Image (cartoon, rainbow, N blue to C red; front, side, top):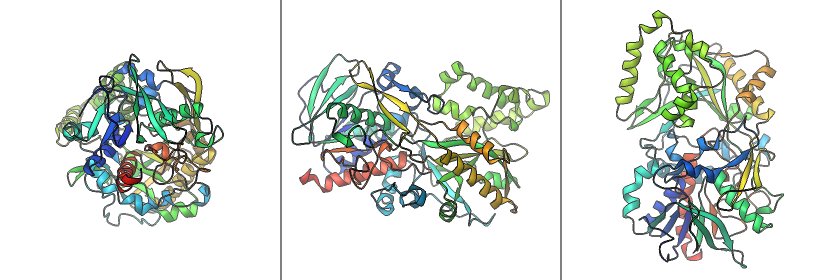
Length: 546
């Protein structure tokens, strides 16, 4: 049910949720299923209004390492699910365990407790069953690296579209659009008593009483709200020297090697495949034993056969690349995150593609067009393309854990947005330890496959210093905003406990990637959703005491 908090007096709901992204909607729908009323406060409307990007303006201190904010945030109903590629990947048991090189970073929940919510999270995200591995015949020895791990892809990626009918008809869920929370009011008894809200154009303001508050506004926005609260109440969340805003993580991504498959059918193993109604894609991953023995951060790898790679030797695909890579044209055709994904990085230049404009390379254009049209017309449609080449050689993409560092952080500036909130300064940093782990992992994978009849890994350099410099040169993120309100066992080490309850304010909870103590190899959407469903169950169980 949609309503307007500025038009009439609003009754106090049992739970108030800030943010209508996947986490906020999952929490509201699960509370509804359990008979609990909630109100969702969403800063945007049903459609994206680019003028609202002013709400997330910030000073990016490290432009070389952080994606543009307009490319990684969406002020609208459904949140960043409107920008999402749909990949659902769970965290691994090792991510939540105590590791020697991360001895001071501990998840305050057991993996089994988190894993039990992956099945309902997959259902909510329309990603099929919670099955993330399959059987792979003995193509090579998998004691060091596995190739049976799967990423699942949501069929309907925009969560608000998937669940709109239920959201509209529920009598226990109230949704207020174009409603921005500008402040959280704290009582003298140390509890949240109300939120101050403004219309997204700044014309209207009001105050809403709160019983239980859940902030599910995305990593940076959640952190910004808490930092602004801390400005009014300096002792909150550990004070200015505490953990709030620190340990900002994303993922370490890029390519420093090629993989050449011995046979075409081995290449086929890494294409998008339809499994039980949803698409999956196979990935390489070091085993837990390999990670432990070598002190590696968790990492997933896969071959990328994309239009950005000129080795497809297709003039038509190179033409498509040049069109999409052109900033003005490409940005009008695709969301920026997707545009960058399909056009690659500095590893590709226009001249590499212009070499494909030989007469002979146009001969297969008809087949290329047929392949693309077939993919686009398929139902369900594959979430991407895996463009083949005759050499069966592809860039090996890595998606590696970003280790938590206290100096990678966000803080408030003195600049304010048009609603009076202090803006963020963002300083996302990658360290030598991040690069060293990626380099070590690739060397080990190259050795592991060296004597196999499956594939070969060819590194871009034989010098470790060159490899590490290349990793840091490519390190850039911002779509995954993790770690800045981390979970911990005590207030001395974090902002929320294992139930996502803030240590300082017992009726305020946080649910976004910002609560992750570590980043793992997985993108965060599935795990944030699982944590949201777990939080709803916790609130229902403790309804009489909250």
